[in-house]
Amino acid sequence: MNVYLDNNATTPLHPEAKKAIVEFLDYFGNPSSMHLDGRLVKEKILWAKEQIADFLGVAIEDIIFTSCGSESNNTILKSMLFWPKEKQNLITTSIEHPAILETARFLEKNGINVKYIDVNQDGIINLSQLENLLNKNTGLVSIMYANNEIGTIQPLEKIAQIIREKSPDAFFHTDAVQAAGKIKLNLSNLPIDSASISGHKLYAPKGIGILYIKDFDKKRKLLTPLIHGGHQEKGFRAGTENTLGIIALGAACKALKSELDLEIERIRKIRDYFETKVSENIKDIIINGKDSNRVPGTSNITFKYIEGESILLKLDLQGFSVSTGSACSTGSLEPSHVLMALHKNPEIAHGSIRFSFGRENSLEQVDRLVEVLIKEIDILRKISPLSK
Ligand code: PLP
Image (cartoon, rainbow, N blue to C red):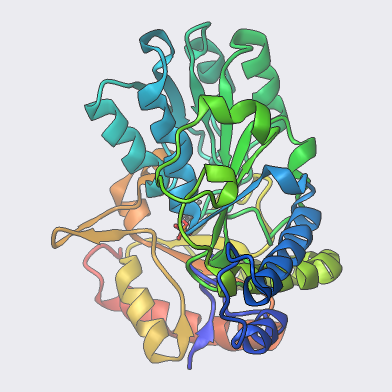
C-alpha cells in the first residue's frame, strides 16, 4: 500500500473501531426486536450513541444516524421544499462540497431561491456579502465548517451573530464533515441549528453518518425525513440501523476523545514541517489558504506551470496517495471550484495537490515525500509548455 496522505477523502479504520467491529460481528439481532438478541444490539447502539454525543459535545437525543454526510446535508436542504414560499430562500457559499452545491442546484430547479457567497483569496467567506443577502425571508443558511480541499475554517460564531441580527428566524446549518475528528468540537456550544458528520472521515467505516439537530424535538417540525418507513431514529430516518457502522463510530469517537488534543498538535507539526520544507526547496508555489485558520492536517499546494493530475500520478508511482481538487466529469477535467473561487484563475486551480495528513502519518514520511516531490516537480516543469 502507498503512504496514505489523503485523509480528507477518507480515513483508515481506527484500531479501536476495527476491534469493536470484530467483537460485534456475531451480534446480528435487529435492534427493534423485543427479544434478547435485539435488546443486546439496542444496548450496544445506546453505548455508541453516548460515546458519539460525548465526543461531539451534544445531547444524545439530538443525534440522528444517517448513511453519510451527503444524506445529512440533503435532509436539511431538501426540507426547504416543504416550507412556505416566502421562506424558500437559501444562502450558501461557493466553496461547499458537492453534497451541498448539487443539492442547492436541485433546489433551484425546483423553485427555491439560492444565493452563493464568495470567498476571499484566503478561502474565508465575505461577511458583508452575507449581511447584505440576509433578510427576514431567509429560510436557511448553510455554511461549511471546514473546507475539504483547503482546510479553511469559517468563523461560525461571527457568521451566526450576523444571521441572528439580520434574520433571527433563519435556520443555520453547517457541514461539519471535515471538522469532526480534525479539530475539537463542541457542537452544542456552537450557535448553529444543525450539522452533518461523516463516519469515514473520522476513522470509522463508510456508510454511517450523523445529522445533529440542536433541540431535535422542538425543531423536527421544520424538517422532513428523506426516508419514510419504520420508527428508527424517532421516526425521522427510517431503515434498520447500520449496526456495525454505529458501533465502530462509537468506538472511534471514544478513542479520539482521549487522543485528539495530542494528535492535533502532532499532525499540525507534520503539516507545518512539510510546508516549510516545500517552500524552502521548490519555487513558484502557492500554499492555498495558508493565512487562514485551517484544520491542522490539510495542505493544498499549487505548483505553478504543471497539472495537478500529472503530479498525482507521479506521486502514486512513487508510493504516495494524494489528491487533486479537480473532478473528472463527462470526460473533461474541470478545475476545482474551490480554487477557482479563491484565485479566479484556471491555471492556478489546475496545478494544485491536496495533501491531507492523519493519525497514521509521520515526519519521516514527509522527508521522503519532499525528496520525491523536488525531483518530480523539476522533471514535470522541464517538459511543461507553461514553464518559462
Ligand atoms: N461534506 C464535506 C465537506 C465532505 O468533505 C464530504 C466528503 O468528502 C461530504 C460532505 C460527503 O460525505 P460522505 O462521503 O459521507 O457523503
